[in-house]
Amino acid sequence: MTSLLRGYLDRPLSGVRYFFIGFGTFIVKFTLDSLLAHHVFHRQWLITDYWTGSNAFYLAGLAKQDAVFFAAMLALALPFILIGVLMTHRRLNTLDLQPWLVALFFIPYVNLALFAILVVTRSPGPTHPAQSPVQPLKTHVGFGRYIPESVIGSSLLAIAVTGLVSLAIAGFDLMVLKNYGWGLFVFMPFLLGMGSAWLYGYHKPRELDDCLYLAVFSSVILGISLLLCAMEGAICILMAAPLWLTLAGIGGWIGYEIQTARWHRPSTALLLLCLVISLPILMGAEYAAKRTAPLLEVRSSINVHASREQVWRHVISFTELPPPKEWIFHTGLAYPIRARIRGSGAGAVRRCEFSTGAFIEPIRVWQEPSLLRFAVTENPPPMREMSIYSQIDPPHLHGFLVSRQGQFLLTELPDGSTKLEGTTWYEHHLWPARYWQLWSDYIIHRIHLRVLQHIKTLAESEAQKEMTHG
Image 1 (cartoon, rainbow, N blue to C red):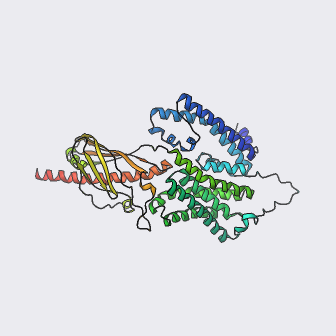
Image 2: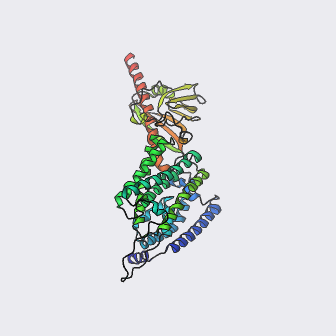
Image 3: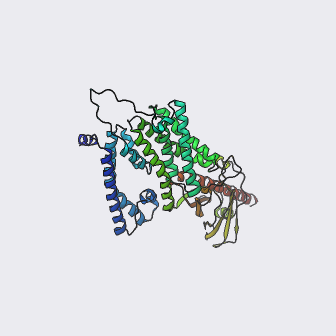
């Protein structure tokens, strides 16, 4: 069985056949997906849902009917995934490219670039023994004459060209569309890394390490440019850096593979131009899709050596907190200062003041002294951006990280102390959602601990005074 599979994967597959097999398979899959969604689950399924249906990554948190729907769609997709992986593996073998590149098949948007590359690349033809070695390509025709041959010249040109193009596209996405999605954080750094490595090795193959360094450095220059153009602040750029730099490195690796695989340069240039043009179109499709952000939950707890009644008094309203010692709150991220309440019982309004403004929190459940649950009707900006300018106002400061509901749960422990648990339910409209959730969960958890620790200090101090005077 293994030998049969290996023999199948080693059979040549032309770019034309790869395209028609892939396109035909996609049409069949889309038809079956639409029929399943419409006739079985009574839902609409559009082509854009393949790139915007990221709720499939949250099966554990979905309602039962949604989880069943996505599970059925995944089951239907398995044979098509197998076909796609096998065909992509065969095409990679035909081009003498590394088989591990088939992993890019599973990365949204990046897989579109991979498909296009594999379609337009010329397959290396057989070499006759009597033939002389392959003659070097004429690289001084067309726009190739403007690309320096030297290491320094070609690297500087690669950084300048890819940086300016990426900056223009990022500006369109951030300032016009006000969108923070897969196009910006996944496809663009990948394309930047691939383009810079390809330009760098246009005249002659370069070393892999040099291509990777150049791709990553180009991404760093783009981040600095966004900062200088007041499109973004330093903290958000640093948060995006692990994702950006990783994908830029992967793109640089692909660019290195391009220059070592006997590429037909006019076809390659046309492909890269098509990818650059398609990027703002994909960003526009993301913007038009208006995806629904999942409701996320962060839960934190602490034990307080005081009774529930004593803790409760400092939960509903607490005095001003001391200045933060945590490093993360010295970067401009919002942190809690004090909480005040107007009224009592359900219908009272709690006002939790942060360094950037106040959360307005109407009380929904008041079960003294065990549970306080509230909605959130107003959210302040999540941070003040660090910038070389006095103040910048990027779109993500408004409506991209939104708290929906919160609660304090007080549980009496056997020794008379209290377990104090704080929970926040929130949404964020940044994609890939899983990546940004790592940051948002961590930040909200640190905010919880700052508040819970302050309540603990106040309640334990009150308990100590009562014991002393009692």
